[in-house]
Image (cartoon, rainbow, N blue to C red; front, side, top):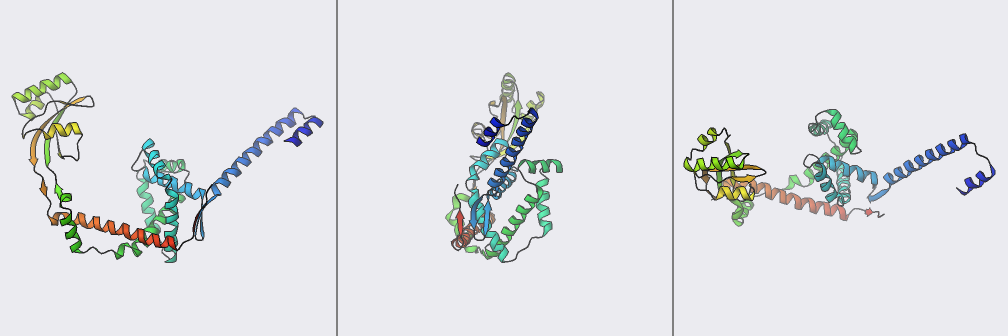
Length: 320
C-alpha cells in the first residue's frame, strides 16, 4: 500500500485507470478470500495412521450427520441436536477411519446396488429428486458425497459383523437368569380402554356431561349432539398427559368424566374396559431379553475391539 501511495504522488492517475485499479483490487481480494477459504478447508485437523482428516472432511461429516438426523428432527430442533453432538464428531470420524482401515486390510467390497438402495431410501423422504438435490446442496454436499459416506458405513458394518457380531452367543441360561433377576422389568401395567368425545364450547360440554349423568348411553348422547365418539387405550404412567391420565384412571368402569380442558377444547372420557396389571411369563419376555443381551454384548465387544485398535494406532489431533 505504501508503494501505491508513493506512486500516486508522482503519477497523475486518470479516472479510467483509477476505475481499473479498483476493479483489480476487488478481483485480487476475491481471489485472496477464496484462497484463504480453500486453505481453511484443506487444513489438517487429525492424523490417523497413514490417513489425514481435513477440516473439509469434518465439515462434510457434520453435514452428512445433519442430513441423516433430518429424518427425526426438524428445523431448530435439528440444529440443536447437531450442535449437541458436534464436539464429539471428530472423535467419531477418527474411529470411523480406524475401522475403515481394518476393512481395507480385509479387502472388503460393497455391492453398488446396496449403496443405491440406501440412496433410494433417503430420496423417498423428499417429494421429488429436485427437492432431494436441493437438500444436499443446502448441506454443501452432492450425491457423490452421500454415496461415498454410505459406502463407508456399509464397509464398517461388514467389518464389525465379521469381527464382532458373528462371535456373539447368547445362552438360554443367560436369558433365564436375566428374567429372574429383573422380574419388575417384565410387569405389564394396567391397561384402560376408553371412549371420548371432543367439544369446542365450554357451556355445551357441561350440558353434554349433565346428559351423560342422567343417561349413561355415551354413544346416544354423542349422537344427539352430532359428536364423534373416538376410541383409545393407555397404560398407567406411560402414555398420557398427567391431566388426561388423572381423568381416566380415577373413573369406575362405565363411568364418564367431567369435561377436561385440553388446548381450548373440552374432552369427556368414558371408561369401557380395565385389563389388570400382570407379570409376563418367560416365554413372552425372552425375545426382548435376547435382543437386550445381544445389544449389550455387541456394545461391549465393539468398545473392546475399537479400544485395542486405538492402542496400536498413531492418532494425533492438531489443535488450532
